[in-house]
Length: 268
Ligand SMILES: Cc1cc2nc3c(=O)[nH]c(=O)nc-3n(C[C@H](O)[C@H](O)[C@H](O)COP(=O)(O)OP(=O)(O)OC[C@H]3O[C@@H](n4cnc5c(N)ncnc54)[C@H](O)[C@@H]3O)c2cc1C
Image (cartoon, rainbow, N blue to C red; front, side, top):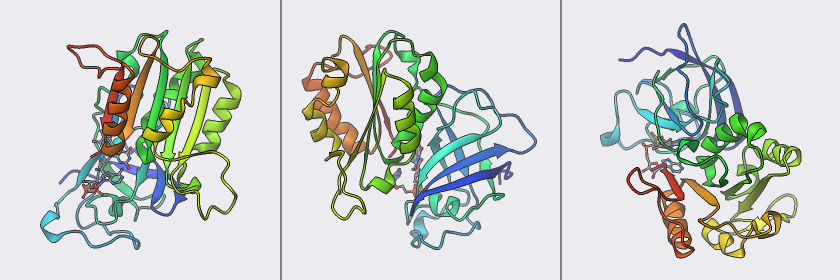
């Protein structure tokens, strides 16, 4: 059984079942990582589940569930890793992560991995980061690490969530937008009814919202394959729907053999 080699140094609850968790190694050093990469968290089956969770399927029970989580912190922060996590109520690991408070111990895999990084993109090209839910995490790491040195390239985050309260990191993203004229933050919600404050922002699913050419005004032209790479992260349904739309606009998937402008990280 792996040793619980790390500790929660900060937990921020964003909304029910949605949190930001900072995890620090105890007695060992984090390895360097590239923004966009993921680490692995784990807890034993004996660890308690959150009060809000539902029972897991008995046949799905694992002795030591471990899962991948995109790193949200800057790669310049060497003391801890930050994660943005949603609770899957019947899941094996997340209900146990949601039972952790500050000081709680867990396993953090010492290796980081993943090819969903900016290494694949020439430095002068513009970047559009599309995410649903916690798929925002890798972009937080990219922006926190690189935005100050981004030069004249344009960057945009288009973040889809159900409700306003589920738009984690929105204060930080609005602040980054205010501080960087080359960066746009566009939150989009799918369920505007019942918001405590009337929502004046964008509404709809990302694949439909994209058709409204949301960057045309700020960028002076709609992004094209000639000048922009798009990163898509989170819900596989959104990624597949967006891929169809974007391929219709001339973008192609990036692979090692066939360079293109679309980069994907599917969470399940
Ligand atoms: C490269 C990579 C990076 C990831 N990064 C993150 C991250 O930063 N934050 C994060 O919350 N998750 C992330 N995930 C998903 C994560 O690895 C787990 O799958 C998720 O936390 C569920 O684990 P579980 O053991 O609780 O559920 P399981 O018992 O493994 O149940 C899995 C099922 O839960 C559902 N599911 C999985 N992820 C989600 C999700 N995010 N939202 C809604 N339903 C989901 C799917 O139906 C999936 O089949 C990432 C996955 C990959 C492959």
